[in-house]
Amino acid sequence: MTPRWYLICLVSLVALPIRAIGQETTSSRTDMNACILCHNSLDDDEMATPVSTWRRSVHRSEGVSCQDCHGGLPNSMVKENAHNPDAGYIGVPDSTVVPDVCGTCHQQQRENYVSSPHGISGSFSPNCVDCHNDHEIVHPQVTRIAISDKCNNCHEDSTLEEFIGLVTQALVPISDARQEVETLRPTGVSVDFIQAQVELAKNTYSSQVSHVFTFSTIKPQVKFLQMDFDEINKDITAVRDEVNTRRKFGWVIIVLLVFMAGIIWMYRKSLPDEE
Image 1 (cartoon, rainbow, N blue to C red):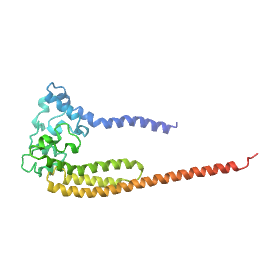
Image 2: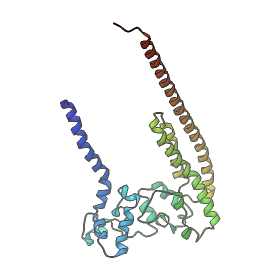
Image 3: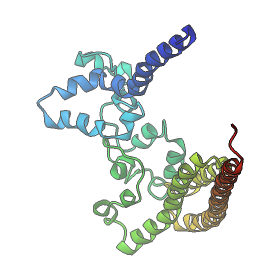
Image 4: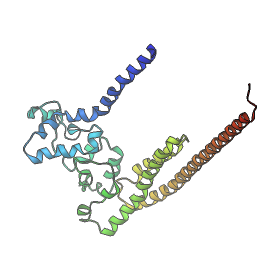
């Protein structure tokens, strides 16, 4: 190999571990948090269990750790320093504070929740952790939207079923469209315009439906989203048709090339042998 190729191979070999390190940085950095190390070593299950549940959460993969919700110093193994109120330590946030803590990252959801029936009275109940758990936070799922042992305290089953049905009509098409986009992207046909429409629908859901909790607002918005999904599905179908057309055209070209190659071969065979 030329010196240039040696250099390219060397850079590639070096880049692989660097890329792997970059991918693991977020989780490894949060796992080295003093809060994690200390609580994980405690014999008290109540104090140690949050570590294992947090490790299964989306917060861990996103680099959200203990101090982001509880305050304090995450780089000190000395309890008095780590739990110093002057360092912003608040311990377990009061229920009335939880929306503001979560709202640090989830601003739109907080805004919708505070003005919803759940938050407008000032009691903030149920609040974020009641529905999403406190440490084992996962990506939003339809099956986790209504928690029966909490929601049934105030709502009839029919109300919960209607609510879940409406949210399902909004969330599932967004998820399905995203999967379709990722499936079609490798074909080479542009799907960026569909991706933009899906993200717009998601943003509409987040701002107009998520954490609103009033049917009078949710129902018309879900109806509008359904019309958006109809247009998105038409575009997805159009892309699929174009992909199929390109494939058929490709096979036609291949057949023609093989046919031409056969004719050329037969023509060469028909020529007299040169002596």
